[in-house]
Amino acid sequence: MKNRVYNFSSGPAMLPESVLLKAQAELLNHHESGQSVMEMSHRSSSYESIHFKVEKDLRRILNIPENYEVLFLQGGASLQFHMIPLNLLKPNEKAGFLISGQWAQKAYEGCAEIREAVEVSSTKDSNFTHVPEIPKDLSAYAYVHYVSNNTIYGTRVESCPPFDHPIVVADMSSDILSREIDVSKHGIIFAGAQKNMGISGLTVLIIRKDLLGRSDQKIPTYLNYVTHQKNQSLYNTAPTYPIYMAGLVLEWIDEMGGLKQIEANNSLKAQKLYDYLDASDFYVCTANKENRSWMNVTFKCPSEQMDTELIKLCQERGLVNLKGYRTVGGLRASIYNAMPMEGIDALISVLKDFKEKNHV
Ligand SMILES: *Cc1c(COP(=O)(O)O)cnc(C)c1O
Image (cartoon, rainbow, N blue to C red; front, top):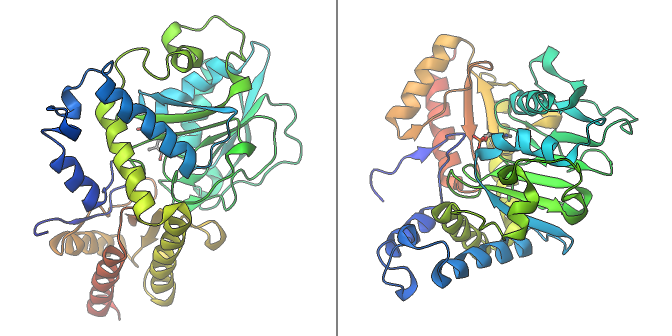
């Protein structure tokens, strides 16, 4: 399609074109209902059939065991930084945090506003270029929180979870549905939808059933997971359109051959880009090799001025949102599931041209 750019944004991020076209085709009249999904009552049977299919598809694709609930929430991943400690921690308990970047830090701060939060390990001193070491003994903490993919710094943990604990909490906002994971080793997995699962407005939370009501405290009704669980995520008006869009993304994952195939594609995409950068003798990747993310590739030119010029050249060639986060600098190419290999090739082609012009 003409005029569509390759969008390397970290989020909201690009969607598969076929998903957008399907949404467009169904916009005015969804499945003979005579209305748009945006206009449907969340209590209607038309909407309910979407709602429950999305849950079913997500359970199948992520292989979510029976003893887990799937909740569709609002407030972004950020609201979970408060809801999780409220729902899990008893007053005398504390939670441990692996500080692997800004989102882990925010989760830690969110918990500290409610209960005792402990920094178990941190890589702040190296500006988060790698993921933290895991201390041997984590038994002092009621739960331990980690971030599977560090969106800003371009690092990830290789196996999820990277430690054993009775209650592991995982923020998978920027790599959910990018690879196969073992849900059963987690207590809670949560993710905002706008990076790899659809559009903003929806947060998916997967929680082991025995953890519902764990804190045993009086929690404001809306912030209590039990409220949403009892009402099948329809306590109040659900984010109906984002849920519908997540459903289209899940159908697209099936069409692509499922999560295994998506994971293989992501590995090839990331490898190709890192291989080029490593061999370039010009660009430098900012994340440690062993911890490199497959979703967010962070790198730099030999000077800041070149970074700026390169970002401009990319923009001119239809590759957008490549500016790195301000605390990291350089460039960041976010290459979530929806970024096709053609987008990687187009980026490498611009990188080659720029290097040729500037290499001394
Ligand atoms: C984007 C992001 C968040 C914040 O998500 P919101 O939905 O904007 O609250 C949290 N954690 C990680 C890892 C992210 O990438």
